[in-house]
Length: 117
Image 1 (cartoon, one colour):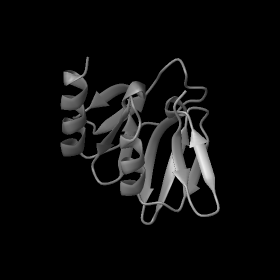
Image 2 (cartoon, helix red, strand yellow; image 1 turned 120 degrees about the vertical axis):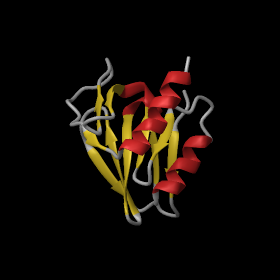
Image 3 (tube, rainbow, N blue to C red; image 1 turned 60 degrees about the horizontal axis):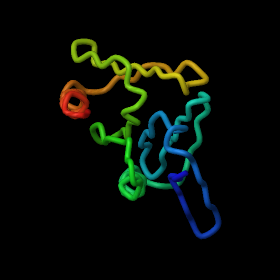
Image 4 (cartoon, rainbow, N blue to C red; image 1 turned 180 degrees about the vertical axis):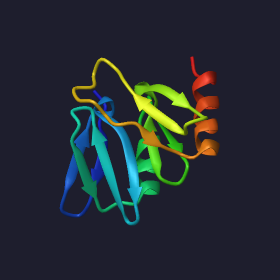
């Protein structure tokens, strides 16, 4: 079992990648939204968390624009016209509201998902 680890000098957070639906940047902070619908704020920039995700053997995360790190496993509907990204999956224990993301960022995610096996 491989964990997504977030570590500071005083804190260690270990999450299973499938528990994370997405991570949203908020300045020097990042909000991690979990499959159970809870959100946790950490004092890390999104770039730091993106780098931590690259250490995973099977990295399910994809950077979408400047603000989001999305778990590809949960992408349900990606609509370029409405600029909406919806989530679904058997591991989701709560309804996760759709995100509004720029058309250009969604295009890149769409291409990534189309190429994935």
